[in-house]
Image 1: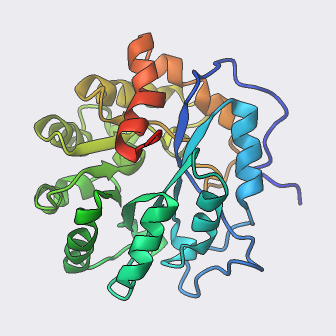
Image 2: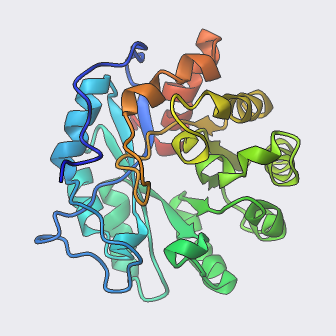
Image 3: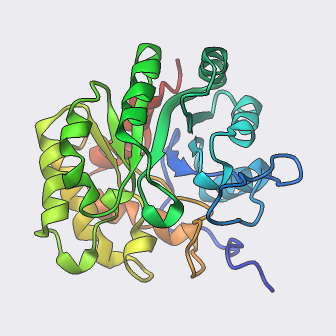
Length: 285
């Protein structure tokens, strides 16, 4: 069977500026070297660091944030191996639990990890105990890390009090995975906008358009545009390559071509791709 996520041999029409960052992407395996978690809900095709680097070279993206995915669980070795291979260009977001040793946190920081992620998507096995989330936040706050939350729709509204109490920067994945059928006036999206507007600690990724609407993904633009208007200095953009658990093939060049539509103003566009990820992830430090 042909690989449904094999990049098509063409470039995006939009050429990103120097220092542009894919702030949400993954490496998977190779499984023979970095086995997938026994408790995983899905088994992806291998997408090692070499495949990711080739994608970024094709798109003209100079930096990336590698986000640990649930299929690898708290075994962060594949992600860390990629970070150590390109320390000036890569940063990471890890998954940890109560058993993660302090020495491992220090080693991850040295490798370029700058955040931890918790998944609250039920279909992906995401049912972390909130006390565990709070303990993890307490452990990494002193490192200057942030928290990434993968929630869906009403999850943002349901977790508002928890998010406010974390006392650290919090990044919401994929525009909160809101239901596009409810529009930008929907309760879930309204809650996300409100959280973004009321706290300087809240960030959001303008990614996941391919999970919301069909290609060419333009129906997701009103959501991304509203989030950028609400907090132009706290939005990030990413491909979500290689789009785990998505049934259709995605051409990442089409996702990149959304950027000038999301951010027509050159200043907003530069912040989205370069300045904001540099601020949050310390590129250049």
